[in-house]
Length: 155
Image (tube, rainbow, N blue to C red; front, side, top):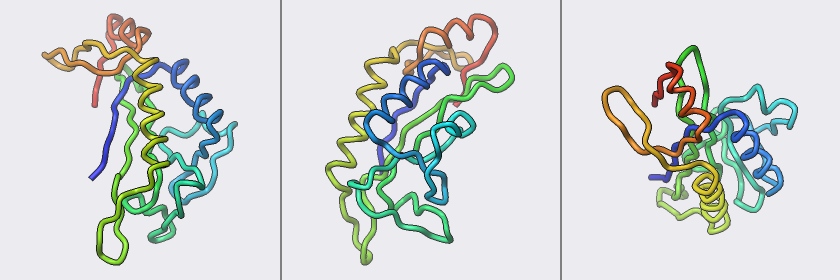
């Protein structure tokens, strides 16, 4: 089980979002649980967000156990060729301990909610074209303009 919010953010808006997270003392981790330094964030498309107050990181085969660790998965919006690939935040709101499900800490869920509020405030929820259909997604105007120039929104 978990929660997620999907979005399409331009590089400029994504950088503002990263600044917001850094100002809130969120750590960016790679899949091994090592901190990603600020200067390396531009090279990283997918990472995990973490604060020590969330609880302990668990590992499985030397990688973060994403289903049982209190981390927030952060996938950036990517632009590749003429495609705009969706970004997302995802959390697992429960973890397993001694074969039973336990709810994650309130601080962890509150931080996720804080991040989703930032997205909802700074990235308009608007219609975009996906294939033959129009759907509502959190998408900033710069990417809508790119769509008009022939870029395609994808999942």
